[in-house]
Length: 198
Image (cartoon, rainbow, N blue to C red; front, side, top):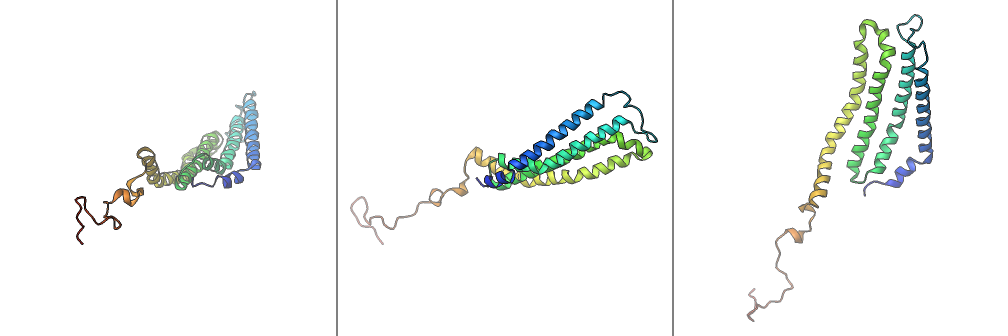
């Protein structure tokens, strides 16, 4: 095992788990309250002097809460991935990084979908800029995920090959792979009773 699990257990200790649980439960409670609030009458009314409805504002608040939770938990999810996986350090680190940046990418996509009803009405004829802005934001984590996956292909393939076919020939001892050599300590007589020459 190449991963120091005690280091990660101490890094993700009870305080971190408790604070992450508080954020998760608090955000869940907020989203639940906002969901109940969205059922109230009159939320389809436009806010004064804006083309935005009150329901869109409530949805945007819930979206920001979920996005904040995802960004907060991204590094924690990566640490938990390191704890959960057992294998070569390079492979585990690549997978943990992919999990981290996938959480960031999901946060960007959730923000794009949830903030649209509150933001795009304000842009009027330039709504395309909203999509372009989130496209640029999403490209960064997507590029990191793609890079990590491409670098992880070789160690993952070697790991699969070792688990399926066993250790490769390079790890075998020289006595198993080379031709046997004459033993210097062998007796210098032949089976017919004669002496070896030389």
